[in-house]
Image (cartoon, rainbow, N blue to C red):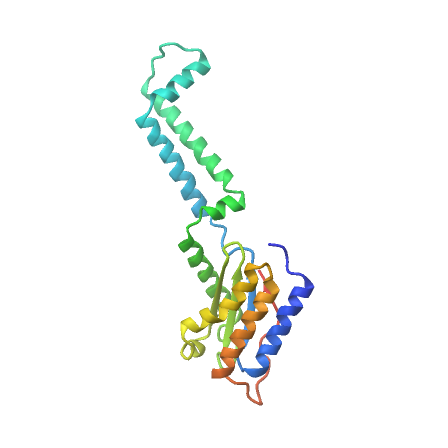
Length: 224
């Protein structure tokens, strides 16, 4: 993900400031390139492929043995158990490392990650960031974090408990619809601004701004 430009930051920051004019809620937009490195998934695919290849060696041993003999010019070789097991282990290790190295290419790695895993990791990261940057950091506990994870193509909205008690989960889904429509067209800053406006409108219905309300969290986009 390319870093957001100063102009992008201004679009999002201005949207936060405008949305908070009508509500006591505090909106914190956060954008990340990815929510996790997914090394465990890469290891799992590499190990699975290595074991699959070793299983195929058990089922079809003759072709690799003949190939090995052709490389060494050996006829009618007598294969001892340690020779066979050693070759199997060497092939398994080689396949494992090659599969893992291939997954260092991000497009392949992310293509191999199950969707449910991406969703769970993005949600976990959003909650983690919310606890650090927004949870219970306002007097009325009215903080909302809008989190966008680019590589996973996923977004999350996390809010303080008083907000969750008044706003149904499906309402947040509706709020994200406009945001995601813009982002799919490559307009990330405009998409975030649309999401912020929608979230602000929802908050204003349940947590209108009072005369003594003050800005408790910075009106800015956070990149992680």
